[in-house]
Length: 304
Image 1 (cartoon, one colour):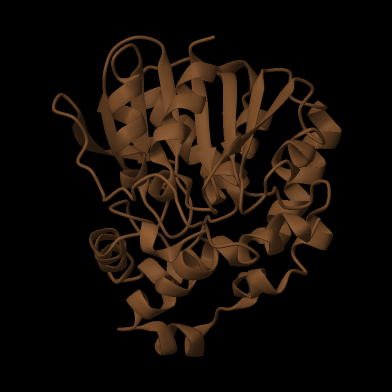
Image 2: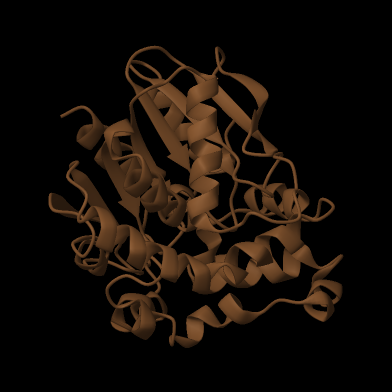
């Protein structure tokens, strides 16, 4: 399982799609702060048609999804929240288990009067997405899950031993003092080491996200996402035991220079109907490194 991560460091691609900067969401999208589960989430909404929900991970915010939102909003209602404590959402002191954050997202769907939605997730968004689909299986019609494992599931105990994942246990008051004012330096480590080619994540993108993660409490809350992993593992094991494998169609996309085919391997532990796929010419940061192919693969799956 370590090969899913260590391969990111083996080859720097010499030719690849052009890097993408942070794009604005299309005209016609609006934003709102939606009260849910004791907090408020910043949510972007646009388009008409069947609903699709896009969940981001660490190092990004919902802004990462703008190119995909532009494509899907032609025939979908697209819903893009910032997770609890991240981006422009509120920063509560607690509640960072993924099972609880799934309740946050269910509340967003309730507020928007959406009873059923397709789901697209990346990184920590995968973890919230699984907790959402496992707790509310009738509300998720299909799920595209991209390049990150699920706590407590499959080969998790081996995956977390990778040196690339030292940050899972990097937290606490002293760590926050070290990172404060140096958020860009800290985030550069992730963009540089977990990408196939660091130059594909341009300066504008780095400055954009570094500014958001430098907001008050933002890094503390990002660390809390990782601090919850042990409880997330326990919760996921219980959800799987109680509800069995997910029945909806799942597209498991691994980045070529990150999880690769291992993404589908991991999802088969929790879902019955899994199709694997690869985002080529990309490390972990699929929407920054190869947005064109990511948009194509996801949109084709959602429109089946």
